[in-house]
Length: 76
Image 1 (cartoon, rainbow, N blue to C red):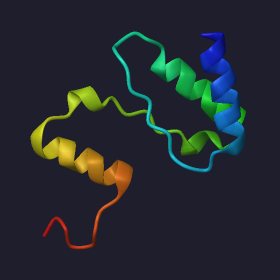
Image 2 (tube, one colour):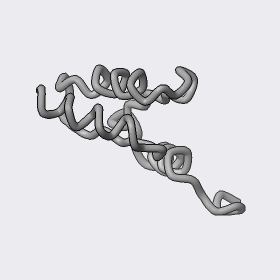
Image 3 (tube, rainbow, N blue to C red):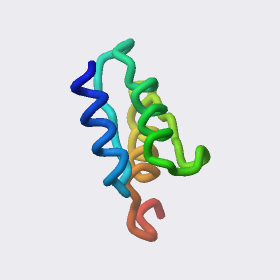
Image 4 (spheres, helix red, strand yellow):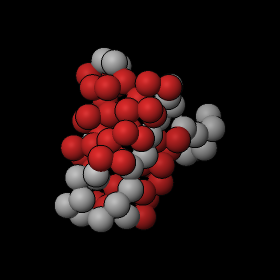
């Protein structure tokens, strides 16, 4: 855990990009994400917590477009 926290500190200081945390249920992803948010100095409203495991089919495509963007007119 100490190694993860050290790496998280380095990332938080130098990253300006979105971060995606993956892992099994109950491994502390949300806790790490909130710590990362605090260390990065970004406003609290830039934090988006999404439980991707709940999405299936068309909903999954919507989540992907929200997280990674989409081309104008892609859904028409």
